[in-house]
Image (tube, rainbow, N blue to C red; front, side):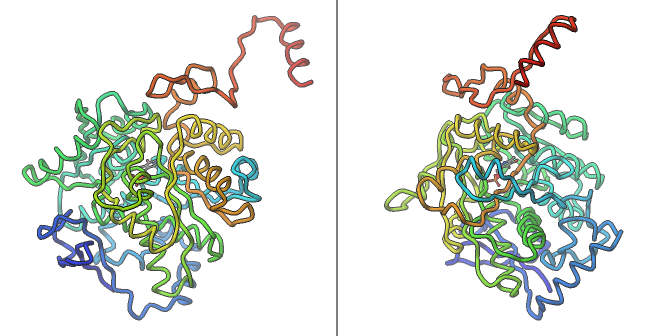
Length: 438
Ligand SMILES: *Cc1c(COP(=O)(O)O)cnc(C)c1O
């Protein structure tokens, strides 16, 4: 088994060796993808091997990404692999969230249970590994927060130098705290994500840093493990729908690629449908997908949403995302700030919790069920992308009132749970409790 880098553009398909640093095709400017040779792979034997590794204590077998390493055959020397026990995330039954979405049942695959609290770890373990295979010292990313938290941790684990570029002031506090604690050189630029990414793409070539944004094809390889692990947890029962939020659209690209490869190998016999949900204030892909003639892709100049993880107006991976959604069948939905906030609170009440962007999945499901695209008895898995504690300020404001959308409009605290202040008085507190339970 082996890997080649290939231009994603079906009319170009320029090829590059796996050890070349290439983020976009020098001939046509398109994205690059890793193309793996899986010939001779026997699906039943692979499943048996992956099952057997669950009894192992070896770090690579214990990783929820590298347990499936036959799907990521770009690593020649396993000693280069950087792992901090990523993946292994739970798949929850969520009856309360299902009822809210209009479904009989719903499963939540919670990527927030990763070591740095988001699905970015599934990809970063692969990206950091490739940096090591290439013998590079400095790694960089532009981030709305979670990519930088993840990259900082993996760089620290691998003794690489992490350099992080963030939009000044528009980042959830938990994420910035992580980057600082893991020792990343952190540069807050006074521009939005899209502007900074354009800047850093020019810088990377001149300054000799390895870019670990999601256009890095190895991150996509790592993120494929999310669907592999999910199907493994379901004993390879294929859901009708997989629903996830979309920002830069790297994750939907990865999930789609993973599913196609599983089908190619014979581990699944058909594709589940995929729905991507964007925040209404930064939904260029939603608009593009639904316009009558898809001519040119129009970015959103000033993307706005409190779901900062998806506050991206010019998603780099949209051509891959479009390809995957068309191959799998599926759709793109959008959700307002209010819809995201309420769906998030419902996921919280389920004892699960997630960050705002993640809740776009449930908000989208509710709309797609109401519209008849997803039937109430469908078998649906939603991907929760990040942990509740990534953005505690948002949570506090929602529950106590005063959460405002970027437009300035107040978000209704439909499922508010505000703390109560009481005097140090046993009688009063006892009376309050008696009233509260009745
Ligand atoms: C990065 C991220 C997203 C968006 O994923 P893309 O691959 O950029 O589409 C959604 N939610 C969370 C929590 C994220 O960190």
